[in-house]
Image 1 (tube, one colour):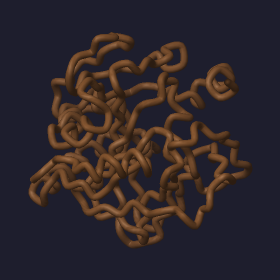
Image 2: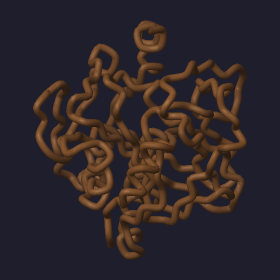
Image 3: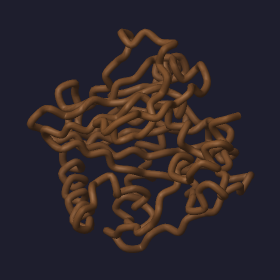
Image 4: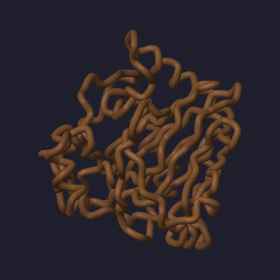
Length: 274
């Protein structure tokens, strides 16, 4: 299975902030991936949701190996450079008939990272389409910097408490990122995106994986749990703590998570009020 970007792919990523439909895993591999996902989900405790499956690559070799798979890294390298790290993963699973949505946002708004140069891989464990809540993006929005994110009032359906100000854009230009199971999309950390509810009778499961060039530094006062793993090349900067590669095949993490928003008012002021 080829894992090589064309010049057109690279140009689209630069101009539009994302590319999609990149094949990674075949049907046989997907069966193994979904079986492993079932084992991972079984580790959740009473009352926990699948949103808790975050950074479990630090405890599960199964997930770590997905994040460091050569076919994925072969797609990432031309977009981010020869020296880069992997530092985060998170499952986003919308069960059939769920009312949960994801408000418009920019990933970089939540991350205490500088410079802003990271990207997200979205790996589809299921076919993803308009019907079951595919991600929606505003092409080219990544090229205009960071926008204000405002708190959502009331008990809305969004899993995020903030929503990006999209008033500068024509929402009619938004595009759905539809994927076949086993394919990935890749988007810039500054691309405005979100997703609607899954009103279909089919699950929509995806794994996000985050990568950054080695010059990117995390503010550990905001996220002291940050750990990175060298994916390709050499880390000449050594800005951030390095994680230990897990030995057990299936394992989970018990840890508080710390994005800028989760870190509280002081972090919000530090990163959002510049």
